[in-house]
Length: 563
Image (tube, rainbow, N blue to C red):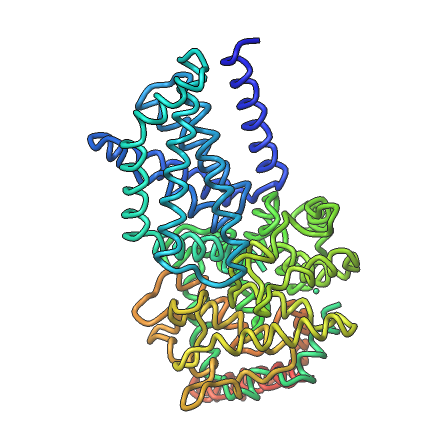
């Protein structure tokens, strides 16, 4: 076998192994979309600067993607960027070398995140690593040219490396400059976007996504006993009613919700709106514009990504419906198939935490290995991050994990819980709110997850504030607009339906999982009135009677919610 064939065989195996590693993690569909977007961005960065030889931001983008998303996604971003950009520059024997080198750059980014162990990386350290990786990338290309085109002598290796040093230095220098210019901002953007996908997201967490974030009685009892307040106890009648009215107004004719009033419906927004409304005491079956909210969520219940399944189970259980037959789908079986052998869901803290909450909501015992996996992912600073131990901790994921720890017994769980509470408290800003990442400024969704985590852990959020500052509840209330929508942050009102739904749970003092509301009390039969009496009653009198009945009904419902 020739040098060229041997090298290509090794590269092919390495690339196949990298993509197998990425696919084995079974990434969420939205993470796949994010990887594709970043790969396109990295390829475009190479194409946009084609007129400037060896001045490219591609290595920076790939390394930062690996830092934010992990090794598998980072490898995929780099390898795909190399392949895609060469449809513009031309494919050739150099393509596998570029794919492999940029793929490894993404893995190096993930390794850098592990080294930082949750501490934010500075602008200069990030730029220096990008510079080193940029030089290493060009050195690999020099070696590839030597293998492909020379007689493979050491003298020829020296020629190839020597001739390329100037171009290599230019590329490394451009990596340094680009990283100094936009590196930290890009890193924060990817991390924030990922969390919103899985939790508020991804999840979002990823969350949120999300996202993505339920033995309901155990969690509810622990939260109340530990200081979680009902809406009435928090004096939040108007505070809750205005956001509730906003969400009701924002419901679309198909029964679902968009990111804001008037936008097309999405299962993501509809799910979080449902949980927010239910936490404020609104029966989901009564949110009945068009076919109704529950009918809309049921129609979308076939989504196969873990975050959607978890959210749908939480909604179904909150509505008092079976998660094993929701819209014709066995959501519990679908979720169980998402758990890996190590107990995690996709090796992600966010998805695993919400998987635990969803199983509890459905009344299913959580495997011991799942609880153990989550406890072991705590970072040295006490927090939890989307990417797991060694990545950057954040308030959103730590708050979600605290909700899962509410009913977990044992000294190990108690120790993890105490350190996570301390981490959350350290992140609070003077305005009372919490940032997603330290130094980013407060936002409503991170604050909501902090409040819910503290509530679940038995800490009264109303008593959590920095010296001279406000409580997180006061911060959330300050973001309620005239129309009742809750802004994401000062001057930022993106996806108000999503934000309002999540913030309502915090304002109502209802951490996940949410217990079903009691069934409405049947209205007693009325004694028929004589024709004369009915005829003599004015419409104004009946309006007063109707108002009294409505007020009494709401009072009874609130009292039943208290007990």
